Amino acid sequence: MKEIISYTLYLADTNLILSQRNGEWCGHGPILEQDIAMTNITLDLLGQARNFYQYAATLIGNGATEDSLAYLRTEREFKNCLLAEQPNGDWGQTILRQFFISQYQFLLYNSLINCKDEQLSAIAEKGLKEVTYHLRWSSEWVIRLGDGTEESHRRMTNALEALWTYTGEFFIPAAYEQFLIDNGTIPSQDELKLTYQENINSILKRANLNPPSGSFMQKGGKTGIHTEHLGPLLAELQYMQRTYPGAEW
Image (cartoon, rainbow, N blue to C red; front, side, top):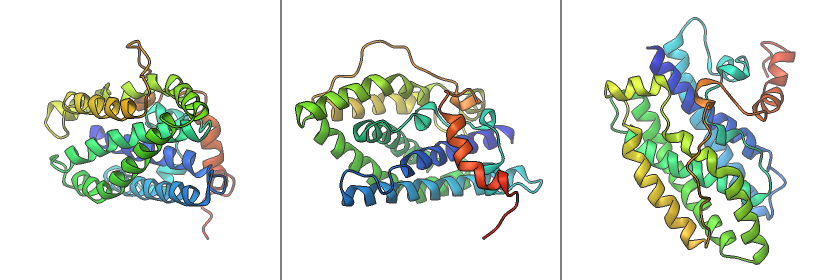
């Protein structure tokens, strides 16, 4: 039971933290249409996070709710992947972060539809349509910026350098993931990794971008070891609930 709870929280936390990051663009997008698109993606991610939190709360019991899981856990209790908490940077870095995560979620949700856990399967199936749009939208922007002007290409190259080493964590299973993989509850990460790399490289090639060399990848987020960026993000996210405990609209 504890393994499926941890895994569900990993999925929920990644969506929540990424939605919080993306939400920082609301009202600040480069053009109105894309500002609205980013805001809609943010709401999609938040909705998926809620579904996962609600399921986790049911499994945990003891009065746990989606709100308590989002607002009352500490930094070390969050299990989101490190990539989701990285700063927005410029528009290109935000786009690339979304592209990397959307490509992973697209493959993951497709595989989770057939997993043994019926609730995870249902949530994945419900979220897949949204993630399909996120992937298409972010892919188009990666190509547009990477193969655009000299300035946009430079910024995307810098974004690759900043974010690339965080992409490998998707496929480094935490102990709770490995347990669920071994008993056949969720798919093996190895089954997704090759397709992920092929799809990422295909888009980067069309964008005239080359992934950085080297095999080192960051990890730790899935087990609560985060970068210096998560603490301030949670402080802002959780401020109202911690200042006025139990407050309701």
